[in-house]
Image 1 (tube, rainbow, N blue to C red):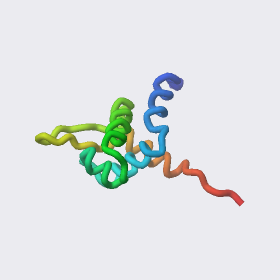
Image 2 (cartoon, rainbow, N blue to C red):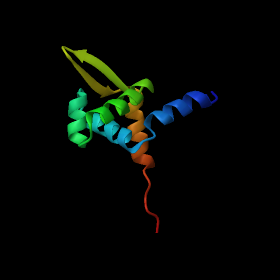
Image 3 (cartoon, rainbow, N blue to C red):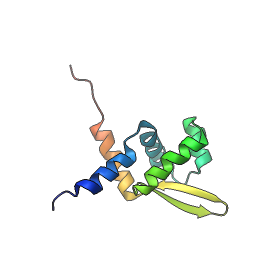
Length: 95
């Protein structure tokens, strides 16, 4: 099956930011986090967290669910696969 270049580009752009990767890693460890939880744990502004989570959601990497007045976030199966890939792909120093 050939690669769909545009879909792949959209997906990669969805997580091509160090903060988004941090959010993905955080959600891999602890799912069902609110924006406030994410912002506090990463020590970032809630507006910044909101924008990054929005982009991750558009790419299908983060799923949102309503619980009362809160919106909770977790990684999609695709998001979990990407985090596992990034951990394997992580840059290593070579001697």
